[in-house]
Length: 192
Image 1: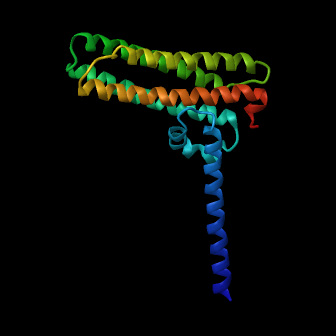
Image 2: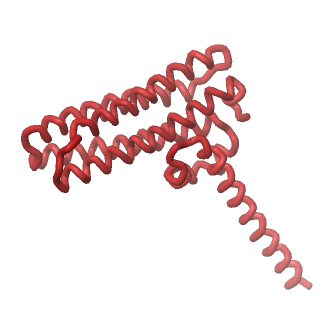
Image 3: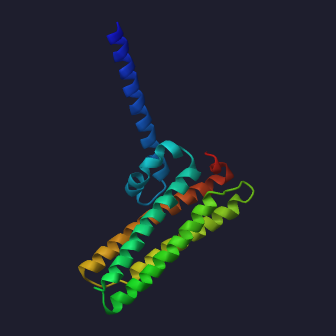
């Protein structure tokens, strides 16, 4: 008798775990449905499923947080490349400009996250206007970095462009999540 009860309990717990993971998968897929780079969004934000669930504010914050982490990683990579002194001439100038662009992007991303953490129903529209403006500016800064290497060749340039391009994709996704939050109105602060 105890074996049967144990078996039923284990079966129930296994199904419950599957149900929870399926819900988590649905949450992130639903959140990422508004993004341009959906698969990247799902991969980069899947770990937030159980906390964000269906809350557009939490998804926007998660998107910006992941973007900040990735932009910081790329900024460090660019600084290492510059210290190696392998890039010369036009590429070296473009690299310096790129580092500055990524730093500007990070500043705007941090400003956005700060506001997303302090959203208020009374000032929601103005706050979200600021956030989407700053996020758009971040994306423009990152694209400006890429423009500096337009037409340039070499393995180092290809690797650098790939790293920065990935940040633009993640930033684009975060911007889409912020825009989704903005479209929900102040009701999106605590979940929709």
